[in-house]
Image (cartoon, rainbow, N blue to C red):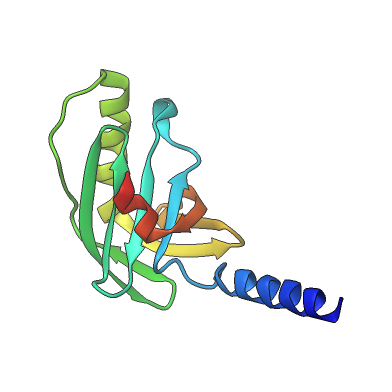
Length: 135
């Protein structure tokens, strides 16, 4: 019985270590307040200081820098696939928003990216960034 309790305790501790909510680095997120019901994801690779994901229709990527709670997302490159206009409009809005981000804030599983005017995008953590590479 002690062995089972020990193993369960160890598994609990290891799973808790995997849920690092103190940084967005190496985590994957899904945009909660996307325009037109778009499915938008965002991941951060800490080793290469790059961000990436799917912006409604197309995949996108860029580099980032942080200093304290300041976040500088470099201009995003993306694929150029066509799709329904409402999703493309949501994608344009999102990709134009990213280089205007000035700060970030973590609140549990939420990542909030804000522009200087206070406008924000709210993301929910979905797992590790490496999971977005399998989309």
